Length: 291
Image (tube, rainbow, N blue to C red; front, side, top):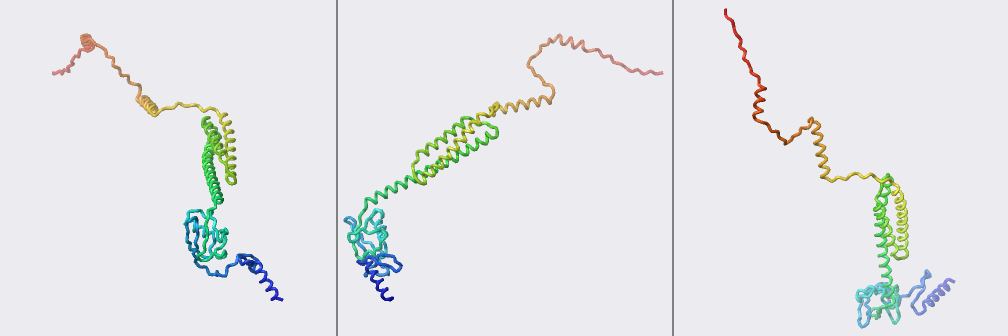
């Protein structure tokens, strides 16, 4: 009974294999069958690949894939491996197929062609990747600028919250810069991650604009600070000198007035006045009496 089952299984495998290109493995997987000329031991073979009027002789492992062969030919021809088509026995071979399982032997001849359809698809894909990278970079730059503007908004909030007043010009400039970042975001196009990142930054900017509108109203209700006289450095030095002089004068007593006005005197009058003011001095002698 067991022998009959084994015979049936063998016959099924042969039937599935058909012309010898496919075989059924014990696990139930259908794979491409190795040819009689190949073995499980890998070896180096040389294949001749024709591209236009040029022939390339490539040494490669017999158990390599056509995709690996394309990468070697890419270095030889300068064509991207994704833009290649390899024909063997007038049949295009997939990049995942193995050389030995496809019947490629030593000195086999293959034909290489450039696929214009894959070439255009790859270029379009490269353009999409480049555009996506550019958009993400632009959004990243806008995000950094928004962080900087958010710092200014926080500083304004702190000043106004403490009862201070911010110049209206500074508030208007901040509002203008926030709106400019919104305009830049509107010009960015993209799907997927780009669209998500763009939406996040738009929400941030709208929140900051609303917060700035509230601060603008609060700032307009703040009392105008009293203006103090502004002094230059030389004016401050002059004031200090004047204060020092006042302190010195108050400690020394009444001020001394020096004038350059001279008085004239008559010489005769002066002599007469001096003579009158002088009194004669009488000498007194002490006498001694003798008996």
